[in-house]
Image (cartoon, rainbow, N blue to C red; front, side, top):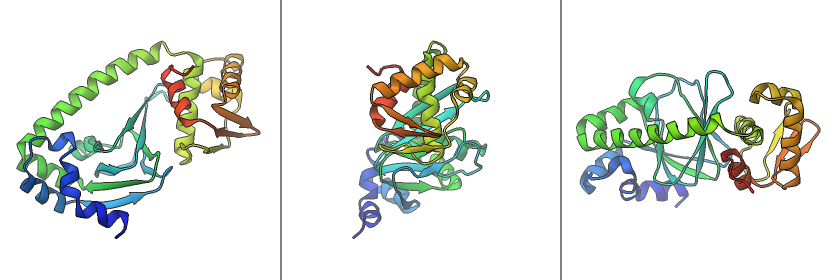
Length: 237
């Protein structure tokens, strides 16, 4: 039995750990599980792309994913890590608008997937899931408000780290040892993060010296993904 078959066999039990299905009975979860497809994605794989018009909702069964949200000006970037038991893609399932976030696999993953139509059917058939969804969205909004404030006061090094994460994710390289090809020049990076070439050069030099990245000609190697994430949060030492 492969990973997908194993995940399918115990899917209803796994869904019980998802906040969306809190308070839903085992029998109801079994019915919901039958509506889902189970898929796998290797680490680094893009699962959804900002701007795409797709409407599936994903439930993470195993592995881990990283999401990035880019503001209209292309400079303010929020990122989040989603752990096992989490879900994403629900906004497009609700309103049919373009994806607002890019998601990639930070490890080999298995997902359960619902079409937008089936997701809405479940909310109508099981009102508790709608209440749970509203609660989860409220918590996300509160957290996002805090993150937006943090971005206003971020250092150049933090903004550079965030940009490197975005570039790595676009190339499906946001992994330990990932390689960013065609990396921007210092001037190009400065234009993107709203700084100057000298400040960006100093920030990149500090990341190199700390062993977080290694820069080469038009390439950046991610030596320590965890510390790059910390640097993007402004917490790396």
